[in-house]
Image (cartoon, rainbow over all chains, first blue to last red; front, side):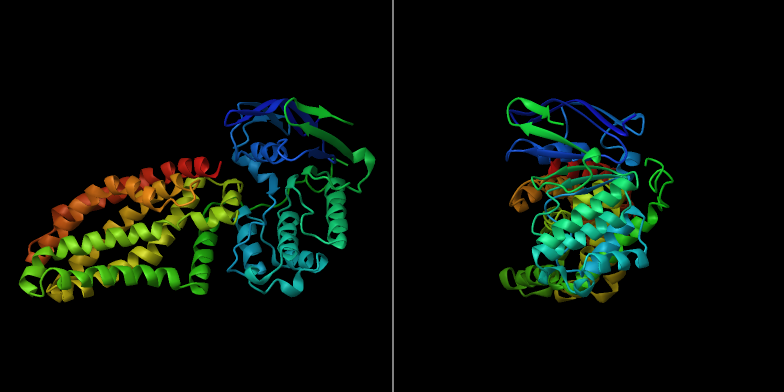
Length: 214
Length: 237
């Protein structure tokens, strides 16, 4: 029984019919990798699933219940990481994380401290985000993602701006998340180094909707 | 593997008030880092008001007659300037998206945001107004009435403006459109506010006008956050 099931998803962006009748299922412990050329609708798909963009039609089932992508209960179980890290430039990394996690009701200072350590972000967490590089911001955003303890991760190019060690770290975090029974949908072209049994992929092509590869 | 950490469910604080408190704390932190915006708005209010004696007449008797209008139009324009950044900064760096995804009613979060915005712009404008009124020949005894009228008025203006601020999120330069959208809605506030101030300055009782102003605030608190939430959703698409 898949935890997340998407059926008959149609999305228009203006006049353009971007996603045409897309179907996908993700079970607990599974990662769905979304690939496709630029403009094929990867970001659109993730944003529709967050309820940030409206869909023409969509039947969404989450944990066995039909719901709308704007339901509060569904949102409490998901984390979305867009390609820009959601951080205020004038606040420090620590203050930013404190705010983002308080907003989700999961702020625990020790846990965040340990995650900062693990992601090598501790030494710059007290500096204003304005002075950090894009890769450092991404590491802070990843700390927020893991600390929010959501079951469903929707990640848009999570490895952008990261060095090779950072990219390895992302796949490591992703594997652990899946082992804990988490779900993930990841839009990326980087090959994800996770157990093949946990990985499915979805290739989007502009024009004729989606094809399931494996 | 499905019986892992997630199925046991994480302890998640789902109360709304701590989230609103987090928004207030964060906006106060942001103000401490960049006090510039607030000071600019206060400066604008001062300059607009002080221009009138120069452009109209330095006679205090004449200035006293136009003082209510000058104070209110000055405060209205200053709050419009401030509203431009109400949601825009958060929308641009992607933090506003996270508000939509935190599983809390967006209207309540936006109400908290608008309330703290009023605290940081509307309230300082209000406090400044009786002092500026003195420069227009108004006696300092009118201060409590002016404070009350402008306090209520700027609160209503912030709430009304939050709708337009949400609607203009998707536009690159929304400033002029924001004014065009909010000003017609702000007319009742201006009418009753200026009337209350006028009565106070003449030494009469402004009670009736203040009640009407307060009722506008109640109406705005009830409806504006819902409209603003709908507008922000559209603005972020």
